[in-house]
Length: 142
Image (cartoon, rainbow, N blue to C red; front, side, top):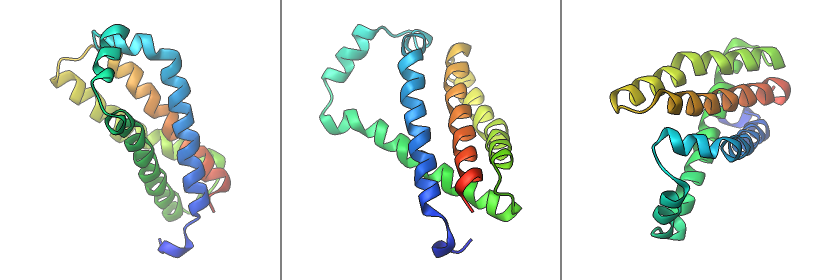
């Protein structure tokens, strides 16, 4: 995959769409996500109040950078498969989620004693992210 022949617009568009999905997803499931961590909104607000603006923004920036890397990697997979279609992109994204993301989240959360619902919520988010990235890349990536 030559650096200059990559469709960077599709990668950035996929990451932006995935990031927006995450904002909506956790906006809807925020209370359940906090409960799965045994946290309250009041405790979360208190934690945030003690942080600098950069520390508050860092997870959002990291999330976007991670989604850019995911989009670039999935682009490479689709390029090597020679399958830039909507269907192929979604399937590839979902297989990456199943084989790498779900398994990693489940193991990490099990060893740290997290509630199974936290795994369900977070894994659901990353499933949506990878399906969206795959869809965008498959649709406009070539």
